[in-house]
Image 1 (spheres, rainbow, N blue to C red):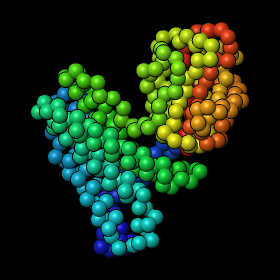
Image 2 (image 1 turned 135 degrees about the vertical axis):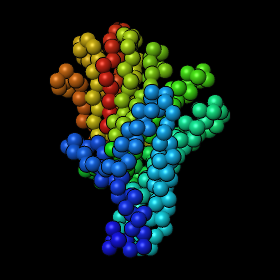
Image 3 (image 1 turned 180 degrees about the vertical axis):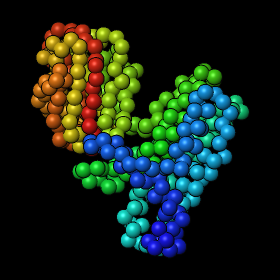
Image 4 (image 1 turned 120 degrees about the vertical axis):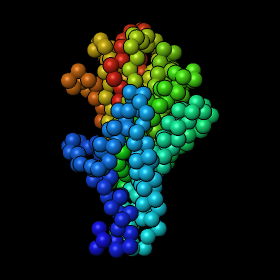
Length: 308
């Protein structure tokens, strides 16, 4: 490291130690990273979820602080401009990841001292940080093979996400609140005129946008629809969905639109009992619509689109 960056090599070492994993990918190939921090992270989460005092709070805090400080050093270094220009998006993402970790610890401290206002402020701040990370991931390094900017994906990010979910659930229970419990930032929305589905949640993970399937049987009246409204017009590569009974599929049509008014029908085909569609178009609205004059009763098994 010292050969590559004689002045800022210590900051580069901190960055590199948490940036060897590729994140989720089609080859399911993962690399070890955060090796020294891994047992600390495991112990932190175990004590948190078992409601024990966090014995290594200071160690975790120092780690997150070192990530933020190392990022500032690298982003302002003139040591190796060629390398720094290449890794700059990942360093910015790494900085935000460290800041999200510090904010998470503020949530923990606020919950311990029963400071509801402080907890909600830190909660909103972490959501805002996640929004910035989402923007970087969807604007930088948009190559077709492994698009986006991932950092700390093997140990650090899962620790923050799992802790965030636990703390938010605990806060909601203790203070009778209803803060959204979702660690992954999701700017997209459900798009439906089905009353039974209007409060259903969606989940975005690794560019896969999915509808959390309801437990009950849904009544799809004539011309009723369900799907997704994207934050903005974006390229969607493919979609899959499955309803039970399978016979419901023959009466459903997949459509896309950039404005919610003019719709284009997308062909679907059944493969392994799942309806599949190749879209490869820019769109904003995606819907599955009942095109018949009859009411269809079916359970939604899954609905998923891959957003570029």
